[in-house]
Image 1 (cartoon, rainbow, N blue to C red):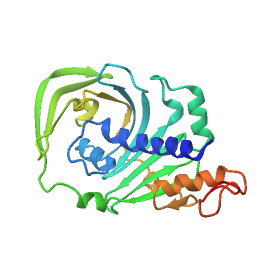
Image 2 (tube, rainbow, N blue to C red; image 1 turned 135 degrees about the vertical axis):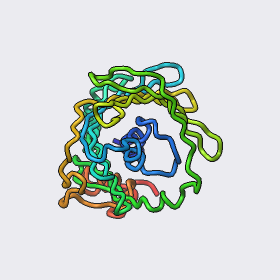
Image 3 (tube, helix red, strand yellow; image 1 turned 180 degrees about the vertical axis):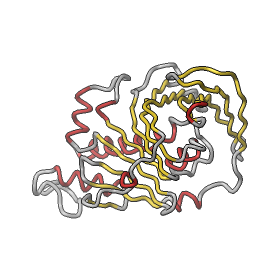
Length: 264
């Protein structure tokens, strides 16, 4: 695989892992936020739980995009999101593409947000590597004014066997931009948002449905990066390190330069 192709696919996977976690929840408040922070605010009174979720996306024309499945865990503000590329289906995603991701160690992505430490981790178990990110930098970029949130109850419905209150939520940012979503909060699960449907400015619709909701405390060790995994400071460094590991000996210089024998 060519270097440019590898980096494109690798970085795309990283973006999918983080952006979908944020986008799928309909919490489009201030943009400069870690996705884990957005999730922590969404779940309100639910401070400790684990659950599975399916996320489906339709583009503005109504075309189905690849659907994804995630596992979530939350403990007192700490948030963990797990995604398995093998569980992506539809939208033109082929088994060959999934196998290629797996061969590169990119078929599983874990994102952990730790508010008390002001850090988040992007972990690739297949690479035995992770990237540590400083979320305090994101906090410094936030707008000073909180967005305006308007919530209107639309009725009651049953979702996945849970009695829910269906509401329309409109978030207006300081610059006037508005984001709308529908949320179904389960009254038997401390108003857990078992379903959300968000429509972005361009008409893209993202629907998230939670299943297997367990409101007992998850193990605290789930929110620590594996001690035996290699740490990188940026996603780019992590991807380049994995690319060098995959290449035959001598194919790239130790400093990531041109392959030996290549033109300058």
